[in-house]
Length: 185
Image 1 (spheres, rainbow, N blue to C red):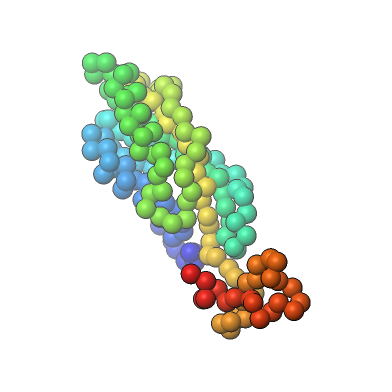
Image 2 (cartoon, rainbow, N blue to C red; image 1 turned 45 degrees about the vertical axis):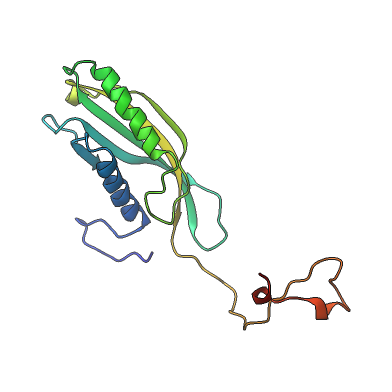
């Protein structure tokens, strides 16, 4: 994706912007019992609960796909918050965390530049002082993201310039047995 310059108040279009929008939309649709789903939230008293807040918290180099794109292994963290006065609030938070794990499992967020999530885990959260009236669980996962456009650094060849040979019918003297890809199948 080509990035376009924008004002500082607007997110720069990129795979990361598209991915976060897709994650938010998927979470809202799949977990209607969550009243607030937000990426990179500003924590404040009085926000709607239950809430699912998430962010990308780490990025490390991934395996080079060899096609001109950059692969990064991104860590995502989400926290599910519930009012602590709810009956069985810690259990309800754990149930919502398990539903989130189930949703994240094998999730590609309807985009074509991510791999399947890995290293998923959930645990009780240490709630910040600003949210002392809440209980929560955190969910964490890693996902490879491919940034940029694919590139083919070699010149395009005309049809018929690529042929296959299969041993033992390959090498000098066997050129007449070579097959074009179009003829396979």
